[in-house]
Amino acid sequence: MITQELINNHVNELFGQNMHVKRVQSLSNAGEEADLEKTIKANTSKTRSYSLFRQGCIYYQLLPNMREEWAAPLMNNFYRYLKSHRIYRRVFGIL
Image (tube, rainbow, N blue to C red; front, top):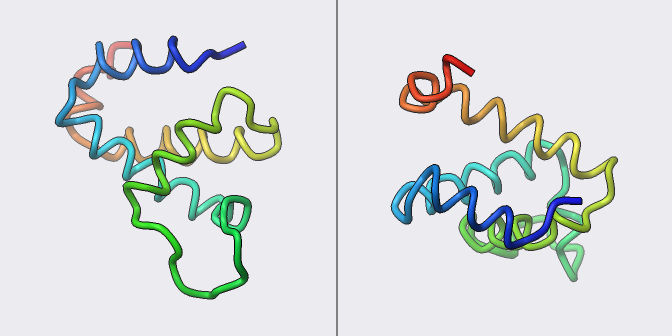
């Protein structure tokens, strides 16, 4: 099982603090694309309830215990966002 500590250590080691903010926002975009925003909203408003950063932080906190049917599309979209950034292609291209 993925723990919050494992995620924190991995993200901080790989990306550092500045890149962490951008990745949290990418996680938020991935969640919106996977239509997961409705799972964290407390109301039925059609407009955004949280900023992209806050929404990404929520997904980040929920990820270790998230249902598989929600986590899989979120992580697939997040991976696609990472692949679209040149620096990540260069760093992780050999993996």
